[in-house]
Length: 393
Ligand code: NAD
Ligand code: MG
Image (cartoon, rainbow, N blue to C red; front, side):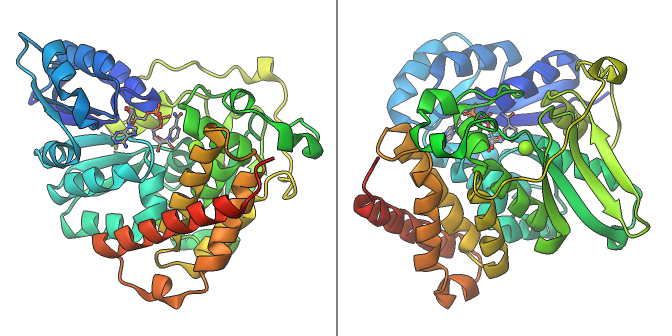
């Protein structure tokens, strides 16, 4: 049996570690090529040693000496910086987990697709920022993108063997996040610590806060549009506090295909790792009799204003996803740094979209890396300007 060559971008994060957990259960099947991380040298070095990775890349260049030291005596090459990340991403592999958080995941993802790898995509921000470019790059290189977000993996699985033109609607579920039971008036006072704990999922801090604000679901609505090509009015969000039904696909005969599973990302990661086969996965099995009840509700737009912004972005198209993503990230940074309040994140992003999206230049420009960089810089500077004018609570 030939070994599968695999790389994990963002290996030290929540998704990266769950991916290595699955790979580590069958080490004889895999040859680990590149492992990458932002700043966590200790975890990166530990995993590089354990999996005998060809190369370990730390994005923060100042940490290279530390990484070299941590890898002394083992065969793994140590590298650092964005260029090294792109070089490592260009090494031929069969399968890549894209689990860097934020738009920094886009370029390595493109590099992996350019050499024909299957890209298991957890990094939803790259689809929101440049979905068309990613899918075009995949098509041009005979490569494939597989969704790893739980909702999108669920939709993907519900569509197996189906005619996509018979789909009427897609429903992605949302737990409602940390503040689903709070009075709306109290949201203004929500702290970073309170927003950083999720009722059902154990995830990285940024996506956990994005779940509390529903920016995560807004990204996922756009991700559904970009990945599957469904129109904005075909995509619905449904609050489902138990997070056991991940998504439903509704067909024109009225039937709904639902995907259920424990809230464990190893479901979606494992499906993408073994696709098109289904292998045994170490996830909890649902006992529906014990669970007894599944609850659903319509999302309250007053509580989750970020959701409405997804529609604006999908309607405008072009580079508006890049602007939305960078504005959201800058507002999230400011919230984490204590510069703006929780509810001001969506106010700031809405204002940035109001200022920038009427400009047809951003909508009509071809989607390439130069134009994306321009849109990102414009989004960043406009968000900074809006935040300077915003009185923090
Ligand atoms: P995380 O914060 O736990 O991990 C992020 C990883 O990216 C780490 O390895 C970190 O070192 C690396 N990183 C951070 N900034 C970087 C940069 N600028 N350059 C290079 N590397 C950098 O995040 P996570 O929760 O694992 O999420 C990863 C991605 O998966 C995100 O796009 C997230 O939206 C998506 N996702 C996560 C979950 C989940 O359950 N955690 C579910 C669905 C989708
Ligand atoms: Mg999700």
